[in-house]
Image (cartoon, rainbow, N blue to C red):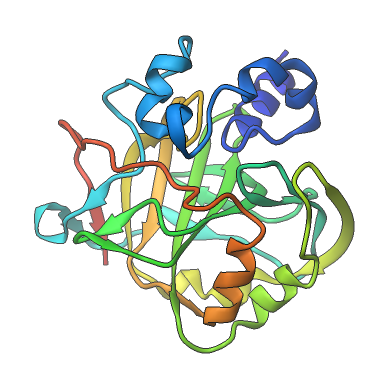
Length: 255
């Protein structure tokens, strides 16, 4: 039962796992990023979701309003160069890379395992109102089914070898899945050297489940314009959710 709950939660971030497609085809057809089923209408059309909750994501992080704290050991990146990507899929909402067991993080003394990476273009989170060309979400799930997502913003500049590797498996048609089973070294992201914001939020796609730990890195990674465009050409146009109210939440800045 616990395994089923964990699987369902991971699927929800992108509605991508094949089991979810089998069980939720009717629901998946309801939401999109445009028209009458765009993010502004998710709360109306996804009746059993949290999309109208008070702790939703993404948010606009205003630096002057955050609580600054010295970095302790709240976040430890435990990525290794031997982790395997199992497959890549185009689920109609994003391009997603699924991982075999290996990489993990430790957040507030709890281990979360990397399950998948997907992309939004342009970014979902903003920092001081700035929208970045790209946002990468690294979704991690603990054995208890809790979720921590690392949000990495991308700006245009030099070519990224990591993104060249990701995009070597593109193009990929909507609904298509490709087996990969190749090693990937995520250390080139240098996440250990970056400052980050943390807050309690939600999944950014239906069912918008709350209780998600968000870690949004302040310093963006750099990739080329061509790499951004190649990802964009394999995803829906503007596959981002609109900004959500912060309400009473506190955003921490770890420096």
